[in-house]
Structures are given as C-alpha cells and as structure tokens.
Image 1 (cartoon, rainbow, N blue to C red):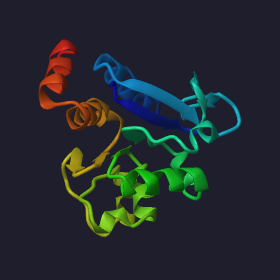
Image 2 (cartoon, rainbow, N blue to C red):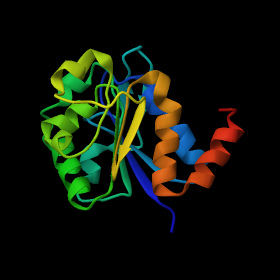
Image 3 (cartoon, one colour):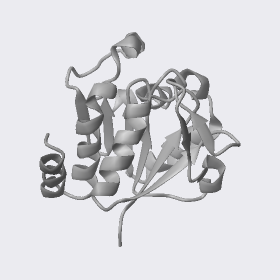
Amino acid sequence: MKKEVLIILHPDFEEIEAVTPIDILRRAGLIVHIASTSNDLEVQSKGGIQIKADSLLSDHEHAIYDALVIPGGPGIFKIRDHSMIQKKIREFHKLKKCIACICAAPLLLLDQRLNQTFAMTCHPSVQAEFPALHPEATVRDKHIITSKGAGTAVPFALAIIEYLLNKEIAQNIADAICI
C-alpha cells in the first residue's frame, strides 16, 4: 500500500518549502494530499503565488496519514493557535507518525513542547524562541524532521522520503534531480 502525506498550506506560506516537497515526494511515488487551512482551496504564498489545494484541512479532521508536512513562511505566526493544526500534530506524535516542519514551522512543534524531547533546527529568524537547536540544515530525530528554510527544501524532502521509504529511493531521487 502506498504511503500518504498531508501537506498543509496556510496563507503566506513559503513557496519553495511547499512546492519542492510536493514535487519530490510525488516523484518517490508517495500520495500527497494538499490541504488549505482556510475556507478556500486557493492559497496565496508570501510571494503572491496562488496555489490550489486539493481539499480543506477540515476535510482531514479524522484522517491519519503516514506523514504531516508543514512549510514555513510568515504565515506561521498567524496559525500558531490553529486548533486543527495543533490537534493534527498531537495525533501524529501520539502515533509516532512523521511530522516534518521547515523554516518557521518548527514553532508549531515548540508550541506542543516537542522541542523538549526531540532535536530540531529552524530558520535563524525564529531561533531565539528555542532554548536549544542543532546547527545542521536538516535534522531528523525519530519521527520528527525539521529544516532551516527554503534553501534546504530538497534535503528536507529527501529526509522525508528516507524516513517513509528508504535511503536508496531517496538517493535515486537525489541522483535524478542532480543533487
């Protein structure tokens, strides 16, 4: 059975941090569901690019997938208290399902106090909120994957593939895209 990933798009998300994982995860044969946090399928990125989600996040209230991916961007500050996102993070964590956050999105993990148990990294603009961070660009600690930002979107996506599938598939994708 193919593994499935839920990627959450929020207004003012960072384009590269969403589109790169969507593309690379689909290249690996993963089923990717793109969900909007608003009541509209069209979600505007921080750069003004409109991306159409497959569904609304509310449509996934009771669904559990193999991974939850949250891109960063300035919109993270507006969704830190989003009850559905908080619930999803708690559910995925309880089931030890992959939770992958990039850029400022690790703040959502901080809000759930997961930083107290798992090694993480984040974008330098929000690192002051974390008491301790790892310097690596992408960090995987058990089922939690974090990454610094747009420039690390490819290694971030490959880390998700390695976690969900295996290192060989991740390397094959890396080779195919000349990494």
